[in-house]
Image (cartoon, rainbow, N blue to C red; front, side):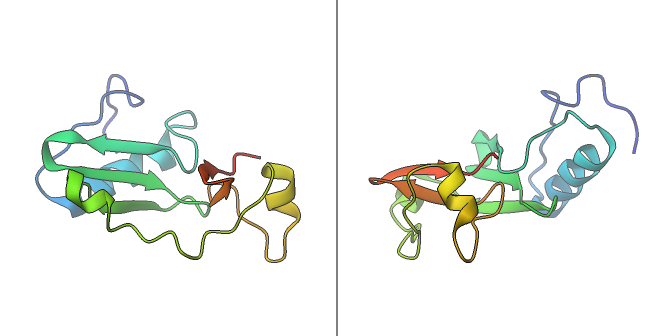
Length: 110
């Protein structure tokens, strides 16, 4: 990958989601401090978000226009008190995975 001056904040998105995924994946693979798993990258002009999942794979979250937020289905999201409880569950919530505590959405970090 061609070096970019500031990989952490220098993301240059295109109108092509596949290009954006490839860019984020290459930056994540090449730069150790580019991102933490589960961290969101917003493409505000196109109402998109990208993230790196627990396996280190760049993914597109989808169309995030204000109406789209009401269509995200969290029905199967499990409830845990904290990251330790989420990690101890069977099956465990992976690092970067989501759970909730009293309706507050959380991403497991440890």
